[in-house]
Image 1: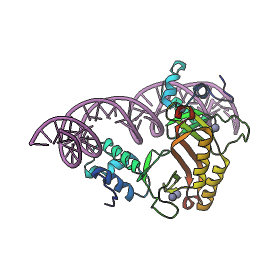
Image 2: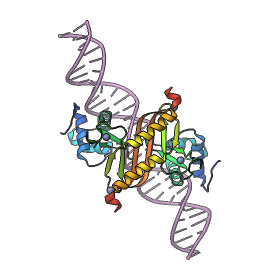
Image 3: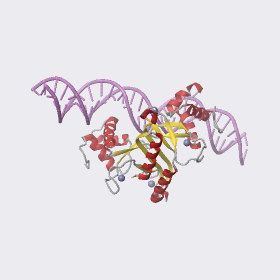
Image 4: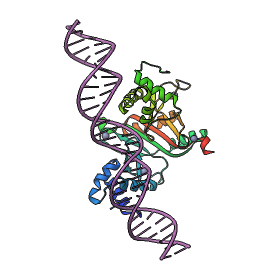
Length: 134
Length: 134
DNA sequence: ACAATCGATGTAATAACATAACACCAACAT
DNA sequence: ATGTTGGTGTTATGTTATTACATCGATTGT
Ligand SMILES: [Zn+2]
Ligand SMILES: [Zn+2]
Ligand SMILES: [Zn+2]
Ligand SMILES: [Zn+2]
């Protein structure tokens, strides 16, 4: 169990499953992985995910209807990331999380201009990773 | 019928429904709107959408699982847009489509750096439009 | 004309993703 | 002790998307 915070048992199980997996998983895939641990119904997963998303420990990939553990390890540039972007390989499924302050800036600037209050921003690139593109 | 190209009957009907609607619609909502015109099954909608997406006449909103007619009317800056972004109001449902070459540039630069070949890029802001934010 | 091919269509069934509704329980504060 | 809060378990249902198979029509090469 590598759970960092005061997670409940279900939350920790889901977080752990996502952390171990080297890639995104759908809620139902997570459910299957956790049947041995007593999970029986989708809601158990969705409820845990909801909390983990709130805490920022997990991200949802909208274009995949699936979920990944946050790989933003309080590192280098900034620990409390703003908008996150994902590059998703269609071939091997690998996902890399990144963020870019210039993009944040441009989006914020657009929002300011239009008077739009952004709550949540999704940026996802689908394509081929360097390994798969050759 | 405001269909521009050599669309088939079903494609034109779906495109027309999306164009009339002032906002995104799910495939099943489109289906319901087109029952009077002979639509009976989801596949009729999905197949038409697939073609319309290919042609760039329609965009898919990943975070909403729904679809909008492209509002990029061969205008001002450039007619053949690269990456499109959407600002989606959670309150009134209004969607505004925009694009930003600086963002395109940053994403392309990231891709170059990582050797990632992007096929499709999703950028969606969820929040409140100026009217709804007050 | 004939067959082959291709793209679009119609229909039924099913898969995949997500939420509603209700009951129960433990922790904690009043 | 009692109410409130947050997590849990369970069943059922709602929503979104695809698979599989049959048919039809236009185009094309012979
Ligand atoms: Zn992250
Ligand atoms: Zn790859
Ligand atoms: Zn443009
Ligand atoms: Zn609004």
